[in-house]
Every structure is written in C-alpha cells, then in structure tokens.
View 1 (cartoon, one colour):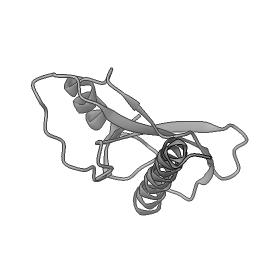
View 2 (tube, helix red, strand yellow):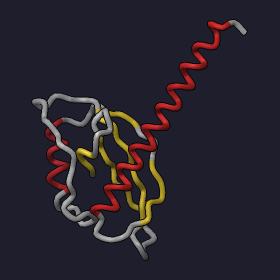
View 3 (cartoon, one colour):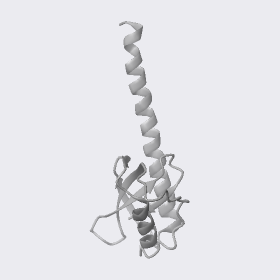
View 4 (cartoon, one colour):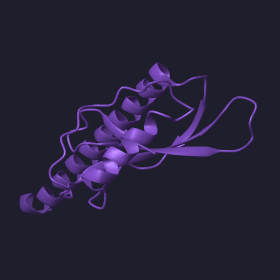
Length: 125
C-alpha cells in the first residue's frame, strides 16, 4: 500500500472520531438540561444522530424560546444566549430525544437546537 493511499483513510477516521465526540457532547448537554429543568423524572429512551439544518430562521428560534417558557415538561428553562441575525438563516445543529414519563407507555420526543460550536441549547420544541 502506497503511503499516499493511507491519507484518505486517516482523514475519514479522524472525521468519524470528531463526529462521535460532537454526538456525545450534544447528548451530554441534553441530559444535563433535563436533569436541571425537568418537572419530574423522565426516562430517556434514545437520541437521534446529531444533524444540521439551515431551515430554522431567527423568528422561529424566538418563537420556540417563547413556547419553551410554557412547556409543562420543564420548569423555567435557561437557554443559551441567542443573537438574532436579521431573520437570516444560519446553520444550527439539532438532536431529537425520545423519552417516556413515569407510568406512561407513550413515547414522546423533544428536538433540541444548538449553535455550531455546541455552546449550549438555544431552543427546543
């Protein structure tokens, strides 16, 4: 095997490791958020893979943040700072958490949105 043919394999391996780290970081942020703000103990069943989106506008984020204040699952959640950029679309990361409330058989979900640096949760629905 030529030394130059190993470069793509090494790059793919590094990208895979980096994406796994971001996945774990996002899960950790959500778990910490749930532990801190859930009204009651909930059972987290699973998480989706972390992904990115450009379809969420500033006005949608602000609307989700307003609605989050009245979400019965969480008590007064503290969300990370968000700076609106004139309704310009920006790339956000998101992950979906599937969970069950105690004594309930129905699985529910919440989607959490992060900035690209995974600095914190900026909105959820």
